[in-house]
Image (cartoon, rainbow, N blue to C red; front, side, top):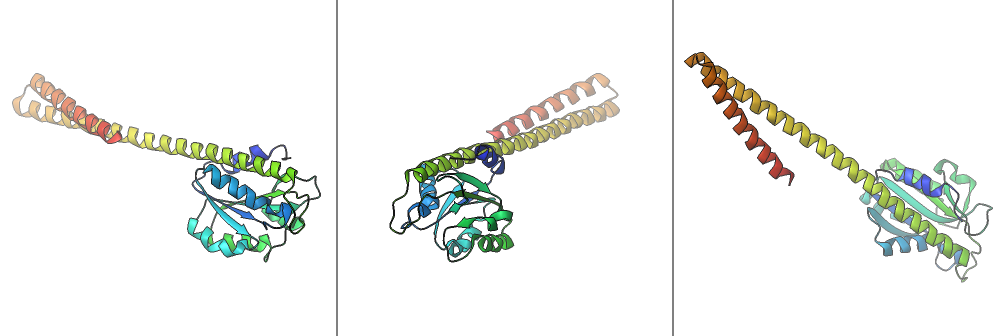
Length: 235
C-alpha cells in the first residue's frame, strides 16, 4: 500500500531528469528482503527509458563505481525497510532521516553509502522503503510484497516517462527559441544589406527609385536565401 502522495512526490522529484540509476537492494533468499531486487527486475523488463538498473544485492556499496560511471541526475534506492507499518506499505524516505528506519541486513549501512556517493556525484537521492512481512531465510515473498513491488515499479516507470517527456519538451522549446533568434538575426542582416546597397546606389547615381529597387531586390534575395538555408537546417 503506497502513501497517498507517493506518485505525486516521485513525479516532482523526477521532473526534468536527464538520466537515472536505480539500485535494488536485498537478499533473494530472505523472503520479503528481495523486494528491492524484484522492483529492479520489473523495471529492467519494462525497459524503462532514461534508467540504468543495478542489482545491488546485500552489498550495494560495491556498485558505487558503476554509479559514478553512469553519473546519474537521480539515484533511486529500493529496499525492504521495517517502518512499523502494515506489510507492503510503501514510503518515500528522506535521506536525512534514514537512520530512523531499520533496513534489511547489509554489509554497510545505506547512509554511509549515500554519503560516499554524494562526495563524488551531485545527484538527487530517492529512497523508497517497502515494509516486509517476513524475512525468514529460505522463505517465499509474500503476496503483499508482490503487490507492492508491482505498484512501485509502475509508479517509477510512469514517473520516469513523464519526467523524460518534460525534459524533452523543455529542450525542444529552448532549441526553437534559438532557431527563432537566428532567423531574426538573418532577416535583420538581409534587410540592412539591401538598405545599404540601395543607399550607395542612390548616392552614386543620384536616383532614389533605382536605389530603392536594387535595395529591395537585394534584401529580398538575401532574405529568401537565408530563410531557405535555415529551413533546410531545421529539417
